[in-house]
Image (cartoon, rainbow, N blue to C red):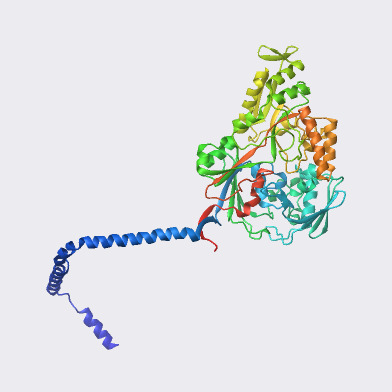
Length: 598
């Protein structure tokens, strides 16, 4: 220890000799200069003599390195490829509002979209528009087609970890039937009884044969263990409807009010790791609800969204088409001019037939853009089979004028009149870029007939809108430009049977024909496809002769998505817009380089 201390003290007494330090620095400088002169400056002449050889070698080395780089990149394409990558958040826009997340009350596109992501159903539709098993593993029916027995898949869990059983299915049916629930789905289940056979089996008993019943099993299943204690009369306003627990591919995280001024809401969802068909590739989905289509288009243009639905064919302009991938998807719906048969002018079938053949639907589709499918009957193209499928007559403006003359509406100058009264029709529709274009085209096509057209456009995005009560239910229109959801099965009883006329029915044309009623009622009770097809052909022929409405086109929804995203399948056909999620398990938001499988 003493020796160490002594050594340290000696070190502390060392003093810096400035003269000695300067002498050493001069010596180092002299040595450095001498070496630089000897080994660098004197040899520059030698470098100049061989500069050509050096340049050639440098060029050759550069060529070799570049060749190796090209070979690497070229060879890389042989064993790697760009593919959709899992993870990330997908931000999607849809038409709102979002007033509830309970699918039993869903009415807007955004609400239906959330319901499809959060909840399971016994059956659902795939990307081709065909029905297939979802929570169900199989179904049988009795010989009369009145009793259907459905088996459930094993291992289905609610988002809180509880098991989904047949009790939940029975509970949901009874909930929909209960008038206190006030669900718009109630009308479809009034006469249907559901009972639990065992934990994984439920049985439905119908009052009569109904061939299309499997298509009714697409309702959302609700959790009995969470809602049994909730009074049905307050279910819509309950905490569950604001923060639901489902069994679908995504789970609820948060309902956010993104814009207090516009009341814009965002539903935050996360992937369900226990989903019985596998975990989705996306980590999260944010569903943003917009008040109208222009707001969605604006959000796309400023890059606010990864993708969007509810974009009409008329809104896909250069800016969107250039920046996004646009996938057209035909819907199992039809856009019609519904002629109010209770109107004193349109109660005459001759007048209705005149309007029918005065309407050039091909030219109308051309004015809207490519992709729209033809529609000239109460059924979609392909729903009726055989060589004798009825079709509406071809456009003939001169014949239309003759029919109006026969009905007593004579042309006086440029206006048709009867007993001094001008032939005036008010066409009503909802505010939409596509429908506005259609309305203008119809007015243009009917003008040569001498008909005075009054246009009425209702903005249903307004929270104070009373379109359903004061327009649809009251049948307050002469002609209604409207979309009817037909579905995968050709059962159109609700739209055209005379029993559906009235404030609570969906027969918006007030159409009544005994022959048509008989064929509609008979077709829905036939289990044999050939007999159903024959009955529907008879109905279609009567419908075309009576012309209670004019089929315009089968609509197409344009799904807009980021070009790096992988979403809806090209060539898909949807029963409803929310069915775009048929392949949501495979959706991705970005791409990555991956090795090819040998």
